[in-house]
Length: 424
Image (cartoon, rainbow, N blue to C red; front, side, top):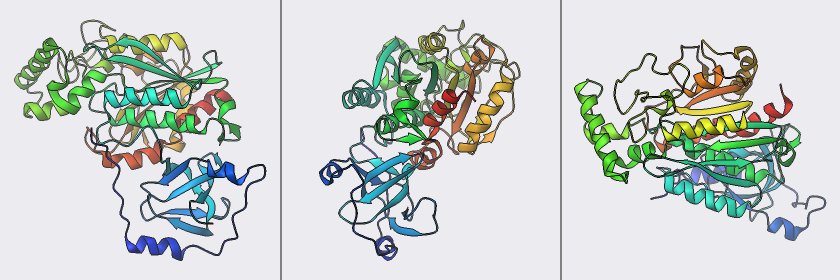
C-alpha cells in the first residue's frame, strides 16, 4: 500500500516568512530538573498541514506576540507539555522555542500514518506496533470474527477495573473508512502523552487511572475491504456471489445506476449485504429501505444476526460505558438523541460540551430504525453519546479531507475521558 503523506508547499516565500518572523531570542535554557542529554533524547515531531505556517508564541497567554512561523515538515522537540492543546517546543537545530498548537504536530516516528486508504491489514500492523511501543498501556482483544474471517478488535487504554468506561467505535459503514484512521491516531496520541501530558489540569496517567477507553476501530472490516478494493478483497467465493447478487437486486430495484466497480466503492454494508447500523434490536425492521441484501439499508433477518453487530453489542454490554462516541461520515453534523431515547436530559449537557469542541451542526431526533444509537438509548444503563459525521463531501472521503477532520477531533478522546471522570 502506497503511503500518502499530505502534500505541503515549501515555497521560498514560506521560508522567508519563517526567518522574518524570528525575533531575537535568548539562548535556550534547559528546563529545571532536565539535563541537556535528556532533551537530546526527546522524540522529534514534525509540523504537518499547517497551511502558511505554524505560529510559535513566546507566551501562550500572549498570542499577539509571535516568535516564529514554522513551515510544514519543520522538526521540533516538546520540552514541556502538552498542556491541553498547547506545548512548549524547541525547533531542532536552532535556539527558537515557544508555544504551539499541538494539533499541528506529529511524531516523526509515528506508527499510525496518514494513508490514502487505511486498510484492515495496516490497522492490524499498527495495533501490533503500538502494543510493542507502549507495553502495559494498551491491551488488544479479538472479540469476534467477521463473515469473511477477519478479526474484530477492541483496544483498551486505562485500567481494566476503572470506575468509568468510554466506548469509541468507527467504520460500521464500509465507505466511511477514514474514521478508523482517525480513532487510531487519537489513541496513539493519548499513549504518547500518557506519562508527560496534562489535560484540563489533570495528568493523562491520572485521567486514565479511573477511566478506561475501549476502541473498536474497524467494526466492519469486510465491507471496508470491498469499498477499498472491490470484490477481489473477499476471501470467500460465496460472499463474492452474494455481493454480485446485491448489485443485481439494487439495479433491478432502481437503487443504483452506477457501474459495478463504482457501486462497490459506495458500499456501506458488511460482506453479506447487511447494513450493520440497522442490525440492532430497538426499532429493528422499521422503515426498511431494502427488502433483501444490498449495498445499504438492509437490516438482516434478525437483530444481531451479523457477527460484527453482535461483537459490538457484546462489548457494549460487557463494559456498560457511560460515554459513547460514534464515528460516521458525512456532513459535519452530529446526532445526539432519538425520539424514543430514555436519556435525552443527561445527554443534552454532554452533547453541548462536545459540540463546543467540534463545531458541527446539531441534528434533531428521529424515530428508531434499529441503529446502534437507538439500541443504547433504549437500555437500562444511562449513557451519554454523540455521533459525529465527519467530512463535507460525498463518501468515501478523499484523504484531502483528513487535515480538517484531525484538527476538529484531535482532542475528542481526552475530552470525553475528562467528562466521564468529572461526572458532569
